[in-house]
Length: 139
Image (cartoon, rainbow, N blue to C red; front, side):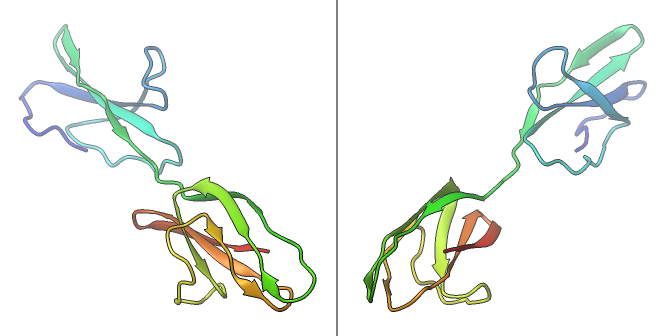
């Protein structure tokens, strides 16, 4: 991040906060621009500009961390061949695969999948938000 219009004699102090609430801001660097540290949670950023005794704080900017997540799943138990219903909960959109390395999608953008099975079967689910994804097994 950087200050787009820099003024001579002005000092810039960059701050971050997870909540954005007063009293929760921490200094993370000085100068007209910074590279933010790696973050794992949504984080607010702002810059405090000072010139002599005068100072002002910019509006805060929220950087959102995309976290696709598979929280839980529920499957079905059956004897013999037939259809089962598998449902999962989580964050994001979900695509279903036959194997962990498969590129063939069995079902797309759905939290439920109802295949016909003949034996114990493992399906893989990929959770994604935009270009961020994780893949895990649903049994």
